[in-house]
Image (cartoon, rainbow, N blue to C red; front, side):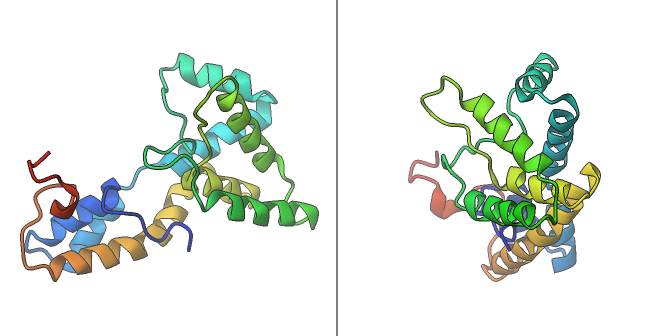
Length: 187
């Protein structure tokens, strides 16, 4: 449920909304949104796998930065400083670790990455929904490429709702940001 919906600014949602007004069927609008969904969850599982294998979040972060990765997948968000879904999801993982259901390696790795990213910063870079769900998928033993597919299964419900809503508007949507979110001067 945590990944079902996102506001109209998410690329997969915006694309589905725009496609829905182009005269195609609902399934095509959904497919456009699904096909454009990013892979932050998959990349975050890859990052966490590396931290688990190497044992040092700081070293892995440095290696990713050396490859030109500016924003680490699963961490940070441009619209809020703390994703409200993070803590409840990580608490569930902590319960599963305490019960012996999962090992806890990836949740520890994620917290180490978050701590390393935040050292010396006045504005934190917290884990986002992609990071929290990546922890869950990794703890359950799913391979990194499956994280994208698993996340998009839930996001597709939100894509469907947005595409359906847009189809009912009776207008063309040629901008990724809904007109109600734009200022009066068009900017």
